[in-house]
Length: 127
Image (tube, rainbow, N blue to C red; front, top):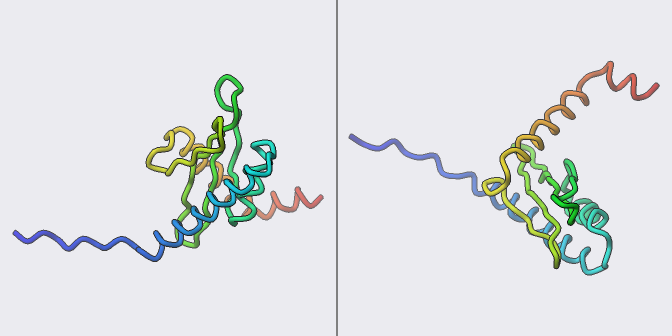
């Protein structure tokens, strides 16, 4: 029996995500050098790289922050978990991210998309 031909990965999409992640991580490193508070550093890096912060939570025992960042692409969202560490930040891919946090991030983005398409909700915000 012949094995079915596997569909090759979308290399263009992977390169775009890799480039945006690289931009985000570089911006994060450069912003951290300015000795800003972690939340400000994260916001500045996301703005610089065209990423979106989905949410920021305090880390366990109040030591630092944990955040979910969305790399925006036309076809697919990619999420990164960002944790403040003693000397900078630790960035984790989706595959290594806590699945509870990843599910919460996906649900949050889904709710915001639905609300943005709801005309009555937008009218209530404008009032």
